[in-house]
Every structure is written in structure tokens, then in C-alpha cells.
Image (cartoon, rainbow, N blue to C red):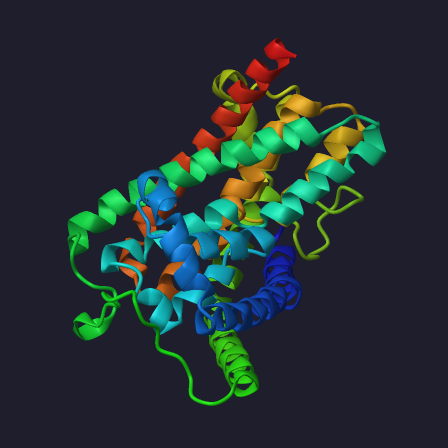
Length: 356
């Protein structure tokens, strides 16, 4: 690759990540923050907390209010949950040990709608029906998210205990029979909640810049290869291709776990560690060349959705939440959750094929 090309690629990749990824995530965080402010102000989160706690508690070990975080990240991307967590009223629904696990919960659903829609759109290339595969993939991602969140809660409970409140000074919202709302008429409350929530989103966008630029640049350089002509030019997203080579070496183990049709398919989840968006471009090529069938699409959907670039966002998200020392635990938990998502999707789709 050469020192000059490597240095150029580092700078070009970091700049492209800033302009193409960070600004996009900041826009998502602002919109998600505005939405979360509205939902909090007008009681939607309180309602969801009461309705979904009987479901969220046994599955994820989280209060029902966490479901809105899963929904916002599914419709956008991982950092969208940070705008919710920045709201002190929202934090009041959690114990302190549950807050770091929001990183794992949100990442498990990150970019879900985008990934699912993309997989369904592959039908135009291959003329195959990928709806069952996409649904199985979503189910696999759900299992992976549950495992990741539960593992993270086991770590954090040991550190903070099960009773310490999330808000400083013991200001947990114990009495759920009332909510703190803004003064003024409905229109004033609407604008105030939306603008204050958006302001929190701006701060979240600034907080994720170091983690995304540093970590994702490193991962992309380990994942990518030479330019289109097979030569290194110092352009963005070039790399040494180490991670795909590791995947090839571990194919004997990965084949029975994920059941992928082609050895090249392992590049998809490996790339998804740093960027789900980048991994989707690989899926397109594999589908077009006949190297990935519906079974593979189910596994790709589960792992791209559950992993959703967590190596490039977990550091920044944990730092923004104020739990940087637990970043290693979050990454370990989500690694196991992502593997479980792929294995679950593989066997679920195999069972579906036997039934149908």
C-alpha cells in the first residue's frame, strides 16, 4: 500500500466518514431528539412504558420505555437512542445499571428498516422473493439483541447494583401517576419540546465524531482492498483486506454456523462490524453473481441489522452516555449477540425450508 497512500487513505476516509456518515447521523440524532421530546412531552413514552413493561422486562430486562429506543433506532441508526437517553425525564424510567445497555439494545435494532427494505429490493436483481428471508433475519436480529442486552446487564449489575437510580441524587421517577410538562399552551409545548430535543441531538452528533472517525477508519482500512484498477491510489475506503482473509481462514468453522452458500459471503458480516451500509454493497454483488440465495439473505439481514457497525459506534455511544469504562463489555456482549443472530437466522430459515 505504501506510506504515502496509506496516509492519504486515512485522511480521505476520515473526511468521507465525517461528511457522509457523521453529518447524516447528526441529522438523524436531531430529528430523533425532536421526536423523543414530543413523545415525552405528550405522554407517549409514559404510555408505552406502562403497556410494554410486561413484555420488555422478561425479554430484555428493561422497562417498557426502552421500546421507543428500539423503535427509533430501527427506523434510523444506532446513535438515535442517544437523543432519548439525553432526556432526563426519559432516564428516570431506568436504573443506573440499565442505561449502558441502551447501547446494546439500540445497536441490535439499528438500521433495521433500511437493511430490511434493501434486502427486499434485491428481488429486482434476481427475481426471487426475499420476504420470508427478511422476516427470518429480523427474528434472528431480535434474538441477538436480547442476548446482547442481557449479557450487558449482567456486567453492569455487578458494577452498579440493581437499585441505584439513573438520575443523580436519587431523582428517579418513582411515582408514574404524573409527568413533568412544560408551561404554556399546546402549540408552545409542541415547539419547546421539539426544539429542546433537537438541541440534545446536536450535542449527540458532536459527541460521536471522535469514535466514528478513529475507529471506523481503522476498521475500514482492515476491511477494504485496492482501488477499482487493482492499484492503491490513496483514495477513501481502500485497505489491506485483512478481515476478509481471516474470514476465509475460518470458513471451516463459519460454514456450519451460518450455512453461507459462498465463502465470499463472510465478508458481509465482517464488513458490517464497521459499517452496515458498506456491507450492503457486497450483498448486491453476491446476489447479482448468484453467490447468495434466500438462505444467505436471511443470515445477512440478521447480522447486518444486529451488528450495524457497532465497532465504529459503540465507543462513541458509550462515551456519550458517560460509561466509557464499560465499552469493552458492551463490545464483547454485542459480538456474542451478533453471532447468535446469524446462527439463529440460519437454523430458523433451515427449519422454514423443511416446513415449506
